[in-house]
Length: 70
Image 1: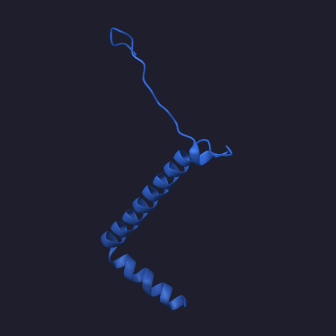
Image 2: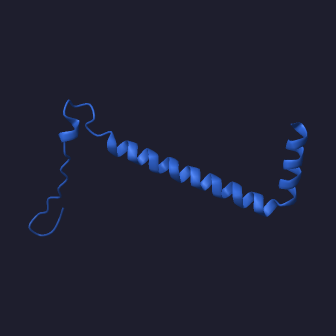
Image 3: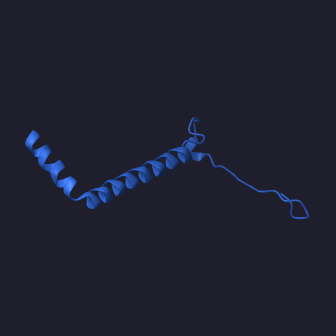
């Protein structure tokens, strides 16, 4: 088992550019998936504590004055 790990590290040290690209891509992919999952969890969490949470809607509106100011 230890010999296999030594062979893997020797192989990775010979191809530094390829290894670094794979590690950067894996890190970027995992972090984007984590951010998307956290965003979805945040959006779903609104009013989940109500008894009829599936029938609850959120209304967002923007009011403007007569001259166009918010």
